[in-house]
Length: 169
Image (cartoon, rainbow, N blue to C red; front, side, top):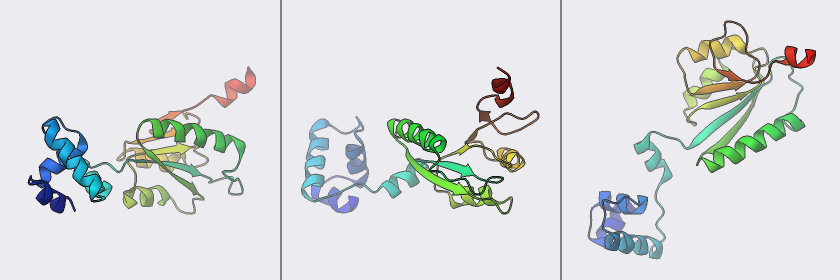
């Protein structure tokens, strides 16, 4: 544990934590000694403890709600391309991707995902027929964005294209 490592190094657990996190508050000699001891003893910092301290999960939920097209699969080339680009970007920014394909049967599907508290925010790919559910959620839950059409009067944040104008063009 971090406490065992602190005892071996003759420092506090806070100093071990700072040294392993690369904080400049710890002298380079002490930090190097702690890193060596950690390596020798196979110590790995707990990501769960770090996440509790920072109040981050280190993951973004990517959700594909299939409200009106329940037979559609995420193996569709469109979804695979979107997921691939999102995974690349999220990884570059230090996040994991948590993927969910949802077939909404009740309007509480997104509330259950938020209550699970596994992610720092949600990216919704396609709003399907779930715009009202997303609007209700957006009133209290801000780290959410949808890729899809923007409907007049909607509350939730969305990014996408105008399919009607695109078709006309």
